[in-house]
Length: 300
Image (cartoon, rainbow, N blue to C red; front, side):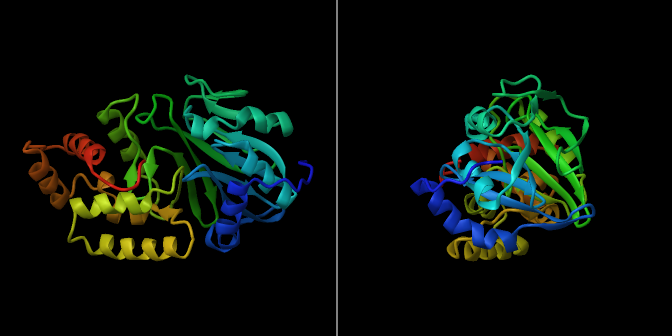
């Protein structure tokens, strides 16, 4: 158990004030047959990272702990015992807080076996099914390379559908940059995620939705679902609320990286590149390059 403390850093205090009250209602409340209800809530870190906290009022599993301080404060505030840490990939803004966290709250740390994950105790390669300690619920481990070579996603089955924790693979209205893998690799990973049920809730690693939607509008300016989503997300952000999670149904309707087989997206990519881009993987590769070069006020 984390001891209570009154030392609240300014950044963390701001993040908690901004998100925590809305998050309890905005984020999933899922029936847990053994102890009642458990919740999925965000803990803000850095400028736009989400650390995800899954808890049942007693035990908690954390996903992608880039900074231990705000998470320790949230565990303390909610009087929770950390029971496990899930890591999607090795980038410091997702795992940089692991060592400090488990020094205070000893718990198993799960992460990609072929990446350097601080404090990792359980290496994973994808294809495993875990039982999350403390919460005692099943979690499927999915290999989704592209952003990094060992990138993982974690799918938890709940009464209200699948909850997917996908780090920097699939974003709300976008996808991660390709740092270590190839475009074909990333396309295959996103295609696999796109086969999940439409009700799947997407818990990605960053608040990038508005930036991604601006790019999506450049690709599909006449997409009515996209226009409506941008307006809804803008209202959420102006109210100080997070735009995540989305659903896979929303992503299929508005995320250009899941729509590369749509004629309008293919036509836009051909117009941008001057290349034929006949297949979906070819379209995806050029679309990702277009996104890399897209000028926006929000870095990602």
